[in-house]
Image (cartoon, rainbow, N blue to C red):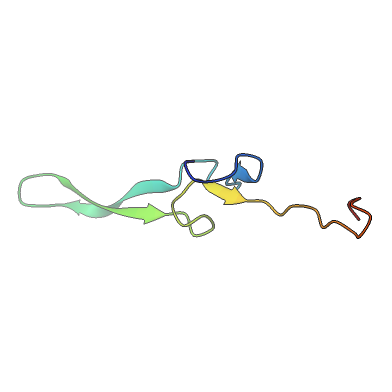
Length: 64
């Protein structure tokens, strides 16, 4: 979570912080290894965090 404001960065609710998984393609290669691909969470694009919106402030400085 480097480079992000911790007050606005939250764990992604779609992947629960596990943004990349390996999925088997259902077969093995010539050496016997499982064929897999990496799949990233579409909501957070593989970061594991999502930015939250800050409340809008009115002219008086109080959130609406």
